[in-house]
Image (tube, rainbow, N blue to C red; front, side, top):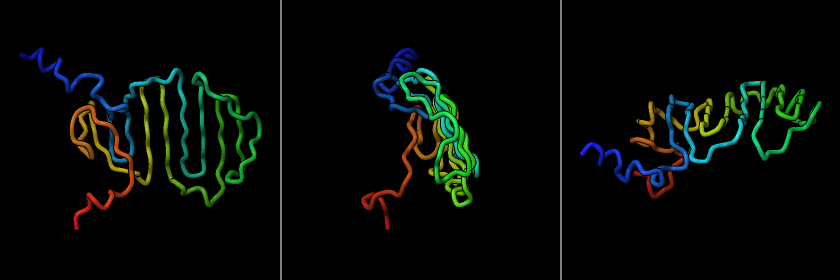
Length: 148
């Protein structure tokens, strides 16, 4: 009887979403994906600092040296990473935004939050209550789901 629950169709890999949230707290989450990335890559912005790195297979390298970009005071690049200092109007656009993936684990963080999310050990409370659920895209609901 217990074995039948473990082998039920709900826990079949084909029934899982492409991305399953493992852990989350308000404005950030960590998830597992079906298709792993061979290597690591990520991008992050926090106030005036911006960085991007990639050591994944089958990707183009970044520009090397001083990179000209109108949104930055200065931006430096190596084949595997870039780092820059943003100009003042760009500091708060957004305050914090980060995405990254290493093998089958992905992370995302944003402040102000793009959407609220809460989960622990693959059990999600908000916004998709249940086990092994994917993150929801942000944005307002369409008119068909809004109640007046």
